[in-house]
Image (cartoon, rainbow, N blue to C red; front, side, top):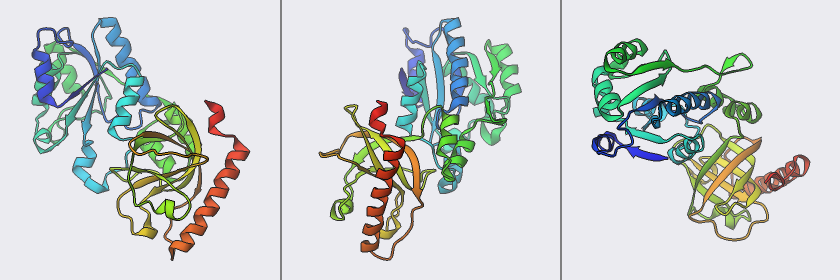
Length: 323
């Protein structure tokens, strides 16, 4: 799969004599946060049509996501960061991911400029899959009907996305996010098609966990997560090994934390994880994150968390046995 970053690189690629977009493409546009069952259905639409036409399949996403641009810290928490999203799209068999920078300049694009510069000049789109409520361009002036009208003249077709429902309700990132905030991990797993996980790189932390007897792998999060609290987890290392463990995700209020972080303690692990990427799967919620009066109180609670997590794993089975 190919990653194209920015409109300039897209236009440069489209002008090449041997461009993979020379014969056009089938594309879809969206945030694809979580790459849940609904997203996978859309991707299948795009992939199947692209194969039928003999052209590449393309997913267009944005960084930051539009709501993050407009709302800043008030925007809903992400289900996954960019790298994890890219890997998820790769796993679904998409040929290209186009990531456009959503900034003030792009925000000002009129609907027709959006169509001309991105869809026609850049992607040479032949077929577009978007929801009938899709809006685009400055002040959200562009819509599904405009795309169909322009497409009829410009030579591309537009198809509505298929809706996926579970228990009578549409599968959406908002619904998954809502479930995660109330510890609905099992229900979220149904909508995602897999257990909820966060994948990230281990960085140096304050090493407080080591000082209080529970060394942790610290994964820096760029945005506040949908999950907050202490969880039983499993983690897969770069070499494929899987360990059970316990994780705290939040801002560490007892030690004056401010930036969101994910701290993972792996049971029966010895070694160094700095620089590795961990895929952390959230299996069960133990408690909410809270501020303790002292480090001693925090240490005592962590000891209880470790005991509770090990007991849960004993009852429900080790993640190692599933690999």
